[in-house]
Length: 41
Image (spheres, rainbow, N blue to C red):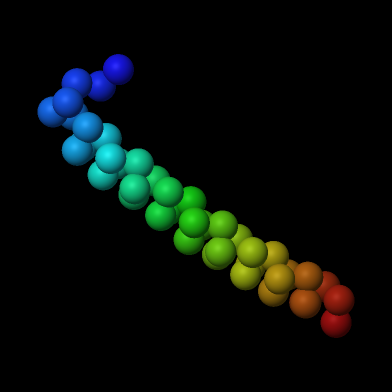
């Protein structure tokens, strides 16, 4: 388990990772929608 002094650093890393995953998922969904629209036309 992380020591108390490291929890701030771990929390910051976790927040950054969650933000990256959130925006990465949104970007992937947009790209998939564009590819499907191009293939359907």
